[in-house]
Image 1 (spheres, one colour):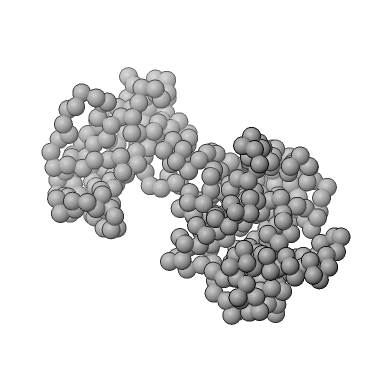
Image 2 (cartoon, one colour):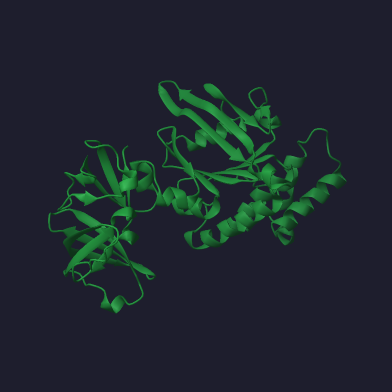
Length: 367
């Protein structure tokens, strides 16, 4: 497939809304998903992401807007006829059927009907794809969580859907096996070449699996972008705080600085992103951008620095790095991420330190 085909819009969601009585669950979402893309809808519980997924699958009808897949408006197509397949969080495997039987079930619903030989060949192909052929005769209760997930994925892919929908696909797995499983899942999806929409509340899962992420809150789509773009350049406070951790300062713009915040001095900001004077704004500073030292920062003549004195309140050791919980001398709390290398020379709890960061390392937000 040519690169321009992969980059073209494959799924278009145009102003889609969903209302349940007086509750607006999805509020005018517009989104374009590319062919063969793995796209993640990320947000906290109740933000509308699963409702949007169910509308794509045909399990809910939109109150407004339309959904177009590969040039075809899905409005008049019932769920069982849509070229989509959904893998639920619980996997929804039939407990009385074997792994092979579960995969074969969806194929028996195909119209025109497939022969037994065609179904058997497709089941064998799918179980081999997910490396479950040796467990074909086992029932779901005889399989581990990861193995059940593979069977559910094989069943979802058996009918060769145009769009694969995954609803919290790793939530049922133990934490220690999630990292390996998500890499395996991404590899399988890419190998098949199916377009995929993943719904999750786990930011690490979304950033590790998806090429792009859409952040949702209160039914609205707040920002869409690649994982690094959303992390490094959030467009609103919700995105800054939901993805990773951040230090957030509030104030108004005065003379190219953020004044009136609870930082000891007005904060220097990147001149290229400064709102107009008097505008209300927030400054997001990631913990890894904050530098700790026992002495004031050196004057290097480069970008302006924001610096203040603080006391180390607590230290959370996480192996590769430590999270320092600091108390500025004005009373405000901050966090800083310190690499594990050279940890013996790092400040200890109760020590007085200096904290600083370069002005361009902060992101100015106006909403």
